[in-house]
Length: 194
Image (tube, rainbow, N blue to C red; front, top):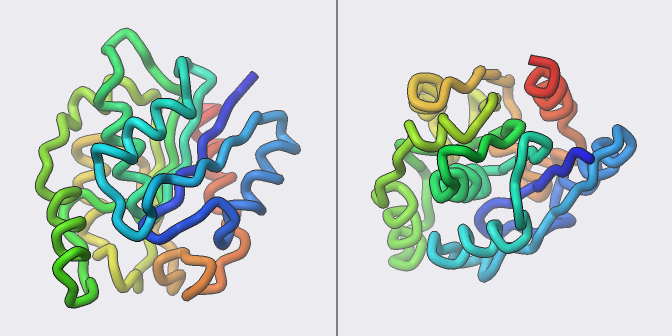
């Protein structure tokens, strides 16, 4: 059975925005879907988020898929980095993911410390790519937090297919009122049938 893990972002939660809709849509297609609550979402840390994802996934395989939003994308990437090279997952969809830069962060020491940790802790993207059958990275042309230039690293280092959407903000349920995101289903279909 195909399994999918939807990982929320910074300050996120499982019932936020488009996650419940996506879970329902994927379940209707025969997926077993998990949307875990990540630890301390107001202060996400690599040392707690990556092990939390690993614990939920258990043993990954070719029928394991991931969908991440914002910080959830980094979490998935860093989790994939921890896998042995003989393990390949089915694929991942990264929504508003970042690898190079964030913008418009609150002027707060904790916020800047968290952002710095995720942006500056090295990732072996070559190792991640080995463990990832295929990926799609979705961006918005007016995302206030994730500059569109982040797409370059996803394409060049992970081989992600890139989709840029118009005026979707940060694809957030609260700020952008995004309750459905069909582009994720299209991306998953592309990955599965690639």
